[in-house]
Structures are given as C-alpha cells and as structure tokens.
Length: 184
Image (cartoon, rainbow, N blue to C red; front, side, top):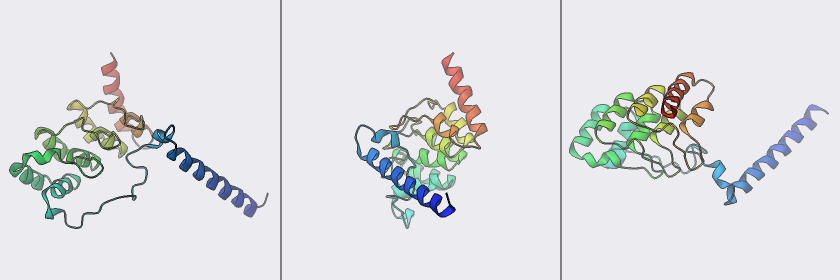
C-alpha cells in the first residue's frame, strides 16, 4: 500500500470513528460515557471581557487567577459569593483548584466553600485539581475531606483523571494514599 493510499484509509477510518462517536453521544443509552468537564474546552465558553463589572464574575476571576487579596476583599463584603457558580456550575473553589492556587483554595475552604460542590457534569473541586495534575491543591482538598472516589456523571473519579496524565506521579501517590487509608 502506498503512502497516499494509507493516508486515505486512515482518513476514512477517522471519519467513520468520528461519526460513530457522534452517534453514540446522541444516543441516551451511551451518551454518559462521553461526559467530561473538559471534552471540548472551546465549545460554549463564555468569555467575560471585564470581570470586575459584576461581583459574581469578579469572585470567579479572582479565584481562577490566584488573586487572594481581591478574593478576600470581595468575600469580606459579600461572604455568600463563596458559593456562586458559573454557567457550567464551577465554583470559585473549582477554579482555584484547577489553577493550583493553594492560598486561594485554603482561604475559600476557611470561608465556607463546599469541598463536595459539583459542576453540571458532576465534577468536584478535586476532579478539577486532578485533571490538571495540581497535587498541592489536591492534597489540600483531601485534607478538607474531599472524596477521592467521587464519581462524575461520566463515572470518572479524580483518580481516573490523574491516571490519564503521563506526568502525574505526585497526584496519583496522594490520591492512592488517601484512597487506601479510607478502605482500611
């Protein structure tokens, strides 16, 4: 088989696979196997041009960007904002966890953020930390009682997400130590 014939076969195979995946996503019986918090990172993303224009966007922005002083100032005047959610259900704690902003994670927990808060797809802040190999944030969340076996809507645990990364040894060790200690 020539290189051009092989490329044609591979392209056709890819197209067939892509069509099959889309068919399965539309089927209610199989669509759940594709649920992930990061399936298509650019799809339906609402970009906030000026997050300081409203307090909800501002607190989410501060957590995501590790702006601890801003976060403290916002929550000092409006403590209930610790529980706000974006359109996908991510809280400030989720955003601080996937940004690996340990000081913000610790502050949000001390301000009453829920360690078991779930996004629209069932991700906890620990899922967010583990998906990005943020072992320091993961360790802090585990210390606050995060469940390493929490299942998302796609039946993924934080351990599943971390094990999918080739460079997540520290995160995996932290999760496995906690998971094994809870099983005893």
